[in-house]
Amino acid sequence: MSDLCDEKQVLCRNRRQARFTAASGGISGGGAGGRCVFSACPDRIKTIGDESMMATLQASERRKQNVIWIFGDQHRAQALGCNGDPNVLTPNIDNLAAAGVNFDRALTGFPLCCPSRGTLLTGRYAHKVVPGHEYQLPAEQPTIANVLNDNGYHTAYFGKWHLDGFHEREGRAAFHIIPPERRGGFQEWVGYENNNSQWDCWVHGGEGEHAFHRRLPGFETDALTDMFISYIKNRGQKRAAGEDQPFFAVLSVQPPHDPYIAPSEMRGRHNPARVQLRPNVPQIPRLLQQARNELAGYYAMIENLDWNVGRIRAALDDLGLAFDTHIVFFSDHGDMHGSQGQFRKTSPWEESIRVPMIISGEQPFYGRKTGRSPVLFSNVDIAPTTLGLCGINKPDWMDGTDYSSRRIGARSSDNEPDSAYLQCVVPTGHGHSVDRAWRGIVTNDGWKYVCFEQLPWLMFNLNEDPYEQSNLAHNSAYHAERKKLNDRLQEWIDATGDRFALPTY
Image (tube, rainbow, N blue to C red; front, side, top):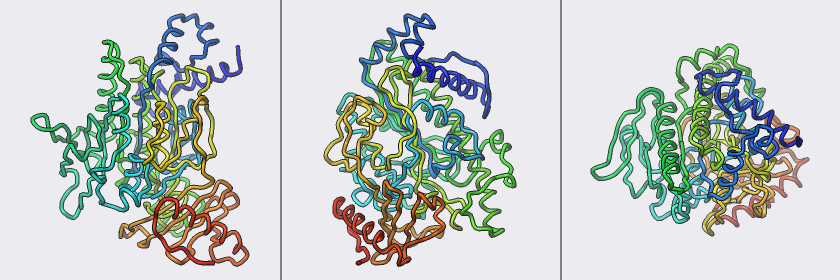
C-alpha cells in the first residue's frame, strides 16, 4: 500500500473521531461512531473491496465541484487547535486542516467587518467597494455570486450580511430589511444586516408574498447551521432526483464576535483563571482580567462553531455530496483580546489581521494538495481562489490572486505577489480603534511596515519578533530596510488606485 494511502488511513481514523464528536454533541471524543468516507485513494478502495466507491469517485471527477464557505466574525487565526492555541478544542476544524491546505499566514487586508465582507464577496480592495464601517456595497458592483450564477451554479447565503450601510444609531440593525436587489446576487438569501445578540437573532429573506422575518430559536450559530444543513439536504435530494446543478453556499455567523456568550455546555469548560494569554498582553491586572474573562466566552463560541462544522461535514457525507464539495473556512478579521493592551479590531497587529484560512473537503483523487502553505493569502484572494476551485477564471474586475493551484495541482497558478497590502481607509471612530487612516504591507520574507499619512508607525521583523514587541519604525539602524518597504508600499498604492501620502525618505 502506498505511503499516500497510509497517510489517508491515519486521517481517516481522525475523521471518525470528528464525526463522533459531531454526532454526539460533545467537544471531544474518540471511537468509530458513524461510517467514514474520508479515505478514498484506489489502494484503500481495493483493500476495503468496495467496488461501488470507485464508480462514485469516477462520477464525482466528472462533475462540477460545489463550494461551501463557512466563516465566523472576529475569529483570529491563532484561536484554533491546529494553529497551536492550547485553550481551545477544535477537532472538526483541525480535521479540515489535516484533509486540506492550511494557509497559516493568511490575513485580512482591512480588519473590520463591513470592508472585509465587501472584499470577500467581490475580490476587490476595500477602497474600491466598501471603504469603512456602515458603508453600503454598491448596487452596481457584481459579486462572486453573479459570476457563479452565470456559470450554472445555484447560489445561497445564510447569516450575517453587514453590507447594506445601515446606521445603528437609527435603530437595531437586526430589524433592518435588506431588499432583494441588495443581496449580492444570491439566488437564495436568508440573513440579517447585523446583530450583536447571539440568543436573539432575527433573519429575513424571500420577496413579495414569500417574504419573511422571524426570530431564530436558540443560539445563533446552531440555528443558522440548521438552516444551512436543510439547504444542503435539499441540494442532495435534487441530486438524487437527477438534477446535477452545482451549488455555492455561504454560512456567515456572528460568533465569536462579542458579546462573548455561548451555550452552557461549551461555556462551562472554560475557567477564565486558567486561560493562557499571549506573551504580548501587558501585565496590568485590569487588562489581564478583562482578557481572560472575554477569552473564556470567545473560546466557548469557537468550540460551538467547531461542533457545527462537524454537523455540516456529516451532512455532506450522508447525502453523498462530500466528494464533490470544497469547504473553505475562514474569518473576516481577528480580535486583539488584550494583546498590545488593545481589544477588538481595526488595528494592523497580528491578532487583528491574521485569520484562519483552510481549503478542504474530501480527497478522492490524486492531485489534491494538503499541508501548510506559507503564502500570504489575503481576504481579497478568497473570491478568485473559489472561482479557481470551480474551474472558472476570475473576471478582470477582481483584484485578488487565484491560489487554487495550492489545493488542486492541475490548476495553473497566478503570479503570486511578494507581499500583502493592508489598509484602514475610513477609521471607525470606535473607542477601541486607532482613529486614523493607515496603510501597510506584510512581505514574504517576514517584514511588516505600517504608516499613517506622512508618518511611519510600525515596523517589525516577524521572523525574529512574532509577538511584535520591538517596533523598528523609528530605529535609524533600519533606515535602508524601511525605505525599501516604503517604496514597495507605494507600488501597492499605485497599482490598486488607492490614495495615501506616504512618508518621504
